[in-house]
Length: 558
Picture 1 (cartoon, one colour):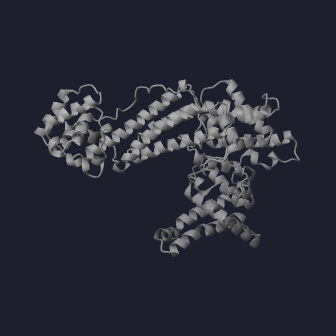
Picture 2 (cartoon, one colour):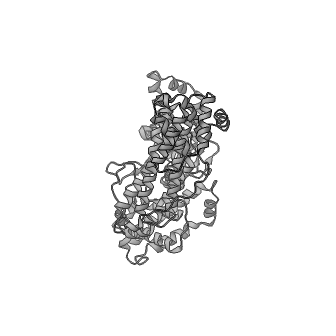
């Protein structure tokens, strides 16, 4: 939900409002479960810069400044005092930078209209009439933190922890059994704890994206893996409370969190609005209370094994297929080869983390697939752009025949490789040019003979004599531009073609039931190969030609 008056999400404004009115509420944002307690809501979680700056100012002394002013002036307007103190604290970093000679900081300090506007905003946020509640500060903050980590493509929808996938009621019941076992005894969450190799990774090997239902995914996040989880509530492990009371406290925390998430999603998500209108959270609380019964599952102490068998392993094909889809949707659409390689390497990192989580979980299989299970399905027919440029390939070969010394120039020409040519005749002509001295590579008869011989030694079908003759004739009859830009285009097409083929192969494998460990290994190999191809060329990366540029370039080489 975006507040149109301030151009900021309502949940971000609510957090600032709660802290301005009662500084003690900040204790709700401390992660006391860490050896070094710290605030789990970070400055960079805020999408609105001036609110992030205000949050930092409050945590770095602003809350103390406000309290001191209120004690010194007990009869003054508390909202005015809070706004004055926060503005003064926010200005300090600008003043320090300006004193060091930062002209932009000096200009910001001199913009009186800006400071007047945010002072007015803070004064309104600090009023008791602002629609925010201190008891719900932690839930507003949760929405901010999750929206930062899981951006959504839908307008005003803060986050999506998982995408729904088709599965039956038995699967949902088993997911609820895992959740219910932890609700019955919060100490069971330790069965999901591990030490990841990455410091940024969650310390729990079962994650929300493993759940097949977005609702159970969000419940697991609110219960175990998310910021300020229910298992961290003092009431969750208070020995003075009965088991039923501890469970009720956690369920109330979860249902309130789900309500707040949907409240902030409701302006851009019809499903969230419908859930609000139907008050489904009461029904969810009833389901969770039922799932937390000791006899909901046969042996609730097997909660970790249930999680592996019924949640984690079945989710792996969907997760892997999503990663492959990201290559198509993001890596192939970007003009930069470096960005394509970054997308591929990010996927490889995600696969490594998935493998680590699976390895740390209680194994339900005896290891990897047996030898008769190792075959993977053949990739489907490529979809979308062909990522081939045969007229440009022909032009590159003509240019190299006229001056093969271009292959030694730094940049795309030196990076050219045989896989950059998609037609057999072009591939072997390129190999022949590289194998011959410059003066010999100009001779069309010798070059064509060398190409045919190389194809014969490789066991390839005979090359098309007509294609070889056409290229040789053009090399003798007309001059073409230097190879630099055209070589860069071929490099770009190779990277995109390789990434496309890798994603196709991974998606095909994910749709076939295999050992999840085998699927991860196979997918990693595919992405590694594509990543190596992209990294080999990223220094020679060039923007993908526009439609006009591509047509004109092909015309030059026609």
